[in-house]
Image (tube, rainbow over the protein chains, first blue to last red):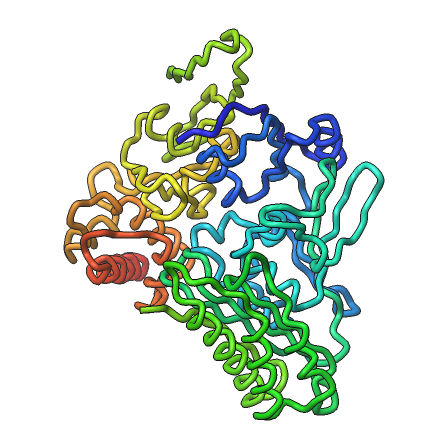
Length: 299
Length: 176
């Protein structure tokens, strides 16, 4: 399969890339890892007239932690970089848990976190993780930079809040006030499939209580779901069997699953509760800072 | 080297966007003129004529088209040929020496790591990337590294054994 014909530009600077997008109009697309866009173009679901490849722009492959604890992930930071990251293992357990579960190992070598967020697939894993963490996407355009909170970044299936002349240059995870803990669990039929159920839990603990909580779900609705009531049930409370059970119940209630070839709605809803309980129980059992990661395979 | 492009009748031949790129494939330097929508897999198979790289699913799922680009395993059906400009590509044909098989190829023969053989080039290239980074992998490491490659015949057991066999051979070569 071939994509339809397009003009290809591979600028060396962000400024050039933004100029190309400004002149290219609504029909231009940015190419980063290409692991979603290229298949879409081959299937002719996307037929951009102009493709602006940002892979030759230097200085976008980073992920780093600012002195205040803010984590920044550049537009060309690959999933594999995050999977191997000692920085995430030491300081951001939810992201560290999710990175090895994105797609498959070869796709992770090319695909990017920021690109996944922009692609805005309702089944995407990173959107749930970044939403649970209260993160944002930094867009750069002709007028400069602006931060778009993740909660408002995805505007619909495969649609985001970027203007046509803006490039998402980094994802930002705010500095934690307490000790970060949490995890990401994903039920998938096989490696590389979309999540049947994905659950991201990101909490901070301080003085024995949960000072901040975020829970987000993927695969169980038409969009990524922020389970705000489940998170609220944890906030200000110590982690205990009771608070964990309450969060699990509320997260399951927030899911809007549909029965399909990946499983029944009832099963998916049940698994949301199981995953919330599993992640939080592991955190509770091993002290704050612990992460829970894993793939669970459906029979 | 000639590439032939589809004529939809709506553009003059001179209006078809073409890019001249240079790249190295299995140690040989090449220059090619490509339409930007040409996929790397097509450049390798039809342009260079190396048909060891297989196209399986064409949807980034099966990994049969896996090659190394600057040492990193990528699915060549999901990368544009034009993006290979300035890069070094290794395909399955680049594994063997002039007179002997690569230990991965020996391993697949010794451990019966293939039946129909269609997925084999991708399996070997994914395994090559693993062994370059981790010469002494566990069975779990091998299974994890190959989890982006699908095989429809063997049930994977012998593929994993083949890669572990190759790892052992490479280590003994390095030690010897």
